[in-house]
Image (cartoon, rainbow, N blue to C red; front, side, top):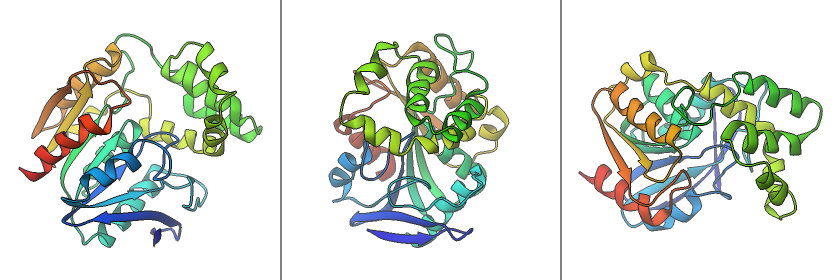
Length: 261
């Protein structure tokens, strides 16, 4: 494990593996380089890329300098890019895809990027998240109700049946989710009102692959298509048999093909 210091002095923990051109992987809500999809993907990519997985601020071994802002998270990525040599490939998952899009719009040196199901789902059919999600998350965290924040994320934000968080709450993973629940307002801030930021997307000139799963909910499938239409110089790819929790076996070949060509 190594650390890079972001512009505001916050230490950002990262791991580096492999050889080749640098590739930074950006996690979605509650995930880190120790928990979630990217730790499984990095070893499969290591023969072809120098892979950087990192803990977004407030998670695992990274610091968390308050107050939070999306700009600070973009600065974290900028520090990692400089550490990696100044120019990188980048892939973001879920809210991490939205953060990656924001970073590209700010002009960070990203050679190519893949955005996997950034959840711009408002008014896309299916479940709509609460418009005051960030405020509600902050209230739960301020009152020490981390479990309620995780439940709100699963049930109200994502639209899972109420029984799902009830079952999860008696499993060992629940403790890990509560440990990073204080970062849920950060993801909500990145997503803003959960609508596609058309003007921001139109400003991006980074070559982009917008990807999604054919078995994801209708609102995510519609969002993926609309986002691809909004970003100039972008391509759309729907992965057969996949959903929001894309498997390493499905997404790694997509990364190999897109970043290597």
